[in-house]
Image (cartoon, rainbow, N blue to C red):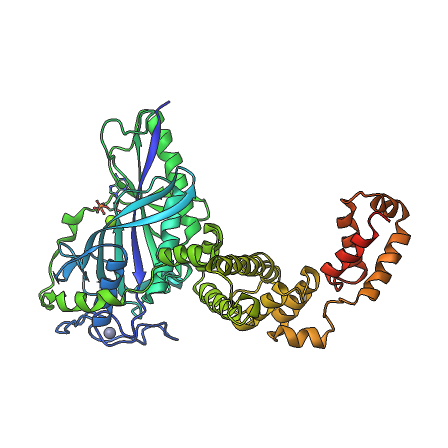
Amino acid sequence: MKLLEPVIGLEIHLQLKTKSKMFCACPNQEAAAPNSFICPVCTGQPGSLPVPNEQAVRWCILAGLALNCHINPSTKFDRKHYFYPDLPKGYQISQFDVPIAEHGEFQIITGGGIRESAVIGITRVHLEEDAAKSFHGEEGKTFVDFNRAGSPLIEIVTEPDFRSAREAKVFLQELRLLGRALGVSNAEMEKGEMRCDVNVSMREIDKNGLFVGSEFHPKTEVKNVNSFKAVERVIEFEIQRQSKLWQMSSPPAVSSTRGWNDDKQATEEQRTKEDSGDYRYFPEPDIPALDLQAMIKEIKPTLPELPAARRRRFVDEYNLSYENAKYLCDDQRLADFSEAMFSELFSWMETVPELETATEEVLEKEKHRLSKLAVGWLVSKYGGLLADKNISFEEQKISPENFAEFIILIAKGRLSTGNGLQVLQKMMDTGADPEHLIEEHNLNLVADESAISGVVKKIMDENPNEAARFRAGEIKLLKFFLGQIMKETGGKADPNVAKMILEQELGE
Ligand code: ADP
Ligand code: MG
Ligand code: ZN
């Protein structure tokens, strides 16, 4: 048996959410009817002139910067020729030898598997126009809808640096987050806003993991894979298929293009791949070279906080585990919500009289205690409630201020876990503030000693054996009795008062 390792590279198209298309003024958005957002430029009429979309150029620079690329001070467009019904000009305006950005790198954290993290080389980031969409109707007719023709895309090409399906998937998820953080693309794979070509080959390694023989071997390219799951499946399938060939001592001799058949969950042979020579690239004569120097200077300082940095800050500022920070930051709305909530919590801390004279150290500790409490409720409890009811975070009704107020009530001991959960459920349904709901539904904790004493007496009478053992000093039964009290009072007994009363019974 040969030891083998996968070698994977991705080519990703991200649809930019500019107002207009790449080289004309047509709206860049979904249209109600086919061929409603079209003009002579994006349908390739003779004599029409393309004019580059400045916003798209700026966003490509921004994406290039976020991917740690070198931004070329001057760039140009090129024609890439191929024949296809959805390409009326017979060529696509793209970028060949001077992309806007190149030579970048991007770190992904997989947190396990073959390696914990990896730095993925970014070969290039360039700008191009999308093709139209063709679809096949009845009677063997093919229709073309040009609404998408000329939409701006950035293409991101990676080095063959992935070593597993999981790494590729994590990279794509990170890219989606990046597109959203930069505000350049929603990067929804299901909507075709992010599309991916997957390249896979295998190579032989020795027991130290060093490659044996050639560094790279002929690859398989699978074009236009359009979901995270499909990307994973494609890679896993190709690893299996190619490994078999390797073990039979007949590894693929030439590169090939295959397609993903979702019904069969398999890749299938397609035409053999053209290399760049076949595209007869040449400079687009209708668009002068662009000098980017002023734009680069202007854009650099506007780079927002990137997802990886935000996660790191969540870990530091709120004392979260990496997993929790990732969970909160994976959805921008949830991350924004959390920040607003933490800010409320921390400002409340400043109003607590006992903390006014506290040392830095004590304040830090208290901050961490609050954060931990808040994240526990937000991630495990509230996250669970939302998942149970199939409500997305986008649709949820609680404001960060009300959630913070709720956490404060728990922190102050005004709510126990039990009735806290009831309050949270009602907040989820109505979006109302917790104080209001506590009043309305009488969910205040019962801290009245005589009332709780009565309950304790009742439970002790009902459980004479346990009561005797407890009174004789079997302290571990405290938990049992606390549980019974909570059950009896519907979670409304103040746990601190209940505990105090129980402890008085000890040793009697
Ligand atoms: P092509 O000319 O066939 O498009 P490129 O060299 O431009 O090939 O690379 C396209 C993509 O394929 C890149 O993402 C690159 O990392 C990846 N790639 C290149 N060679 C290999 C290989 N031997 N195995 C896996 N991926 C590869
Ligand atoms: Mg390619
Ligand atoms: Zn147009």
